[in-house]
Image (tube, rainbow, N blue to C red):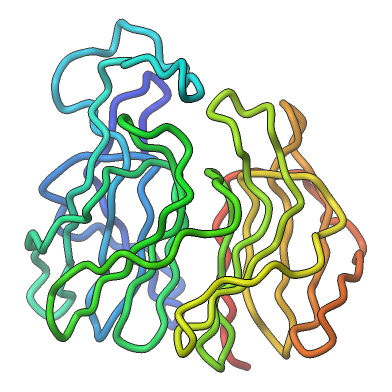
Length: 256
């Protein structure tokens, strides 16, 4: 994350549900914000993001869409770190092939999928790649149907990956309702029925045969809206709104 002044943080905290308490653990080696993360085989992987470790906090942070892409001076990272809880330490692993900010991350089996985002060289990305933890190597996937950043993604129990909403413009003026599904067995993307609500910076989780999507924002307006996709029927249903509007939140499905 980042401080209110915009400085990237390396601080990491862990929550123990049994003790209902937070604990600070070893900080990351590289401060970063707008990164993505996923847990694989007892390790927490943190991928990409912005770093303000070199001084450029006085400049503009506005991200401008490609092809009129302007270098803000803020480093965009392709680096990856992994945290071992048993030893309370971080280590660097193989970097991604592209630097990415505002991407999505999903874990399926022994693979960490990283989808879309923003790149200094290419602007809003249509590309996706995955890390195979057995080989330690990144592999490029077929490009998505739509380029997007600030989208949301989740994986179903059968291993398919869903990505929803987001923005096709680095100016954050191109919110979309497009939904896609990646089948690792076929190594192919397919378009699904669009979601009901335009949004980016939302949250998502899969539970009970449904993909739930909530919050986010449209323009500058944070949203209370909640909807879910029936993974078998392929149709969307709007649910009662949350009590509080929120964007950029985190969500996870817990059994029980």
